[in-house]
Image (cartoon, one colour):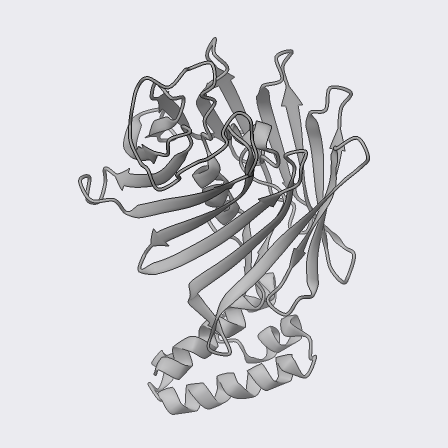
Length: 356
């Protein structure tokens, strides 16, 4: 049964792809991420639902994100944790122009291209499937005069889905409200945000389609001696309010020979309140960057139903045979139509859409 589970994960995991769009403005530089100090890279480890997700972010000397590597402990390929990576490219002015997503095999499976306005605001991103070269989805951003993202529009070019998010900010530039709308303009709910004195989000309040309070997600942090957080705990009020449902730990590598911070002991964790606020621009939503990516995970699957006869050996042999066909280069979508027990496969082929 364990092998059946691993093979089922393999068939699904091989075709997971992260889109370049999200429910918010993605952040690709130290400045956008609000990281302080001479950060060279950082590694995050998220513990959630019994599995670990490890992400390694690397920056160039200008503070631009140039590579991100992911590893998923609870998704295995050939007995090893599933991995993928993203490579970011910039022009000679330091403006992000594209990023490529690489699968576990090393093949490019998606490319994202970006457009900016004269102020450097990222106003458009287009996701292109590889190697087909077909446009997959697109998002557009609208900014106010202060550079705050006030509207985000998403279009799924393959399936025609549309979504919209409208944001509000306080006088300090903190996002305090996000309203969601579906493709026909109907209100789908909203979130409001609360911050601590270090400008980190400590609560997200969720409201339903009737604009009535539904539930709250709370966050607690631990900080290093520079003022960047290195541990973030997530608490869901609807489950176990006193027990974190997710723990995000981050190890930050600082550059050497810095006049501002010549030595940094990142293991010295404290919550002192005497850090100069003028120097303390903290990373506010790195964990949300990961959470937003979950909204853009595109999943393909071939479903084998054990309930037909309960014969796990027969199902295992069928999955193995399908896997061999995939590895031999046969078209996944055609195999899904032919072999999947999912009755809706004729409508959506192998695609499960975006996981929310």
